[in-house]
Image (cartoon, rainbow, N blue to C red):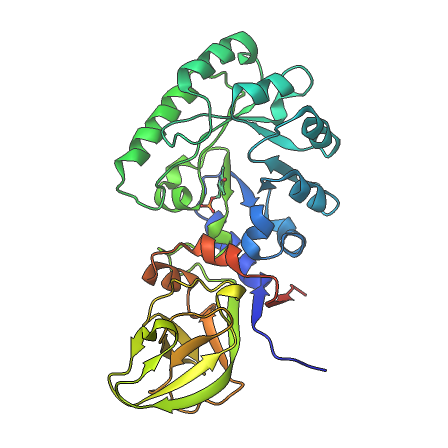
Length: 353
Ligand SMILES: *Cc1c(COP(=O)(O)O)cnc(C)c1O
C-alpha cells in the first residue's frame, strides 16, 4: 500500500557547496567546525557527517548522545559545546575523545584534575550573559591554573547577523583585549555563521559554523537552502467573493477564488502562526497561504495558478524558495523552522554518490 505524505528532502550536495563557499571567506589560519547540534539542524546528523567529513576539521554538538552517535564515523575533533554537567558525563566524554567547553566554575572543578587542557575550550562572557566566565574571574583562574597551558579561548556573539549592532564591536574588543593577555599557545574561536560573513577578520583559529551550512543564512544568495519541505494537494475548490477559509474565518475572499488544501499542518512542523500571504510554490509558480494553518492541513490561494491538480506538490521552502523568506515574512528564524519538522513527515536524504 502506498499512502500520501508530506516530504522533507535533504540534498547533501547543497550542504557541500555551502561549506566550500563559506570556507573561502576564512582567514588561512582558521579551521572549520561544522555545528551539527539538534540532529544537524534537522538534516540528520549521521547522514550529514558521512557526506561532509572530508570538507570539515571538526564538529560541534551539544548532547553527549550526539557525539557518541557520530564518533564511529569520524576521527575529527568533536566539541561538546556546553561541556559536561557531571563526573559520569566527564568520563564518557573522555572515553570518546571529545573536546569540552568549560563555561563555569562547577565544570572546571570536574575537569581540572584529570584531562589534557588542550581539549578544553574556555567560554568567556563578553556580553551575551547566557554562559561563560566573567573576564575578571577567568583572569584569576588563568593565573592560578592555566598560564602555561594550551587551550582554546572562546566567546559567542549575541547579534552577529547585524553588522551595525554596537554589541558586536564591544564583544569583539573585550575578547581581543583578553586574548592578548594569554600565552602564545592559546587558540581562539568566536565566529558563528553571521560573524564569518560580517566580520571575516575575526575567524581566528576555529569557526563554528551552523546555519550557513544548511542554507538558512539570509544575507547571501550564494548560500542555498538544503532542505525542501513539500506536501501534496489533497483538495481543490472554488469559493465566492465574501466567503471565508479555515478556522476563525481569518481569511476572507475579496473576489471569487480557487483554494488548494495541502496535506501539512502544524502537527508536521509548519507553525500555526504562519500569516496569510506567505509565499509557497506550486508547479514553479508562487502562490500564497490563505487561512490559518490547521493541525493536518493548510489552505493556499491558487486563483492565479495555471494548471494545478490534486496530487501536485506545494513547496514551503526549497533551493529556489529560501527558508529565510518564510522565516522573515513570519517573524521567525530559519533555525526554528529547520528543527521543527516533525517525525511523521517522510524524510528523504539525497546522499552524494
Ligand atoms: C549553535 C552554535 C553555533 C552555530 O551558530 P550558527 O549561527 O548556526 O552558525 C556556534 N557556536 C555555538 C556556541 C553554538 O551554540
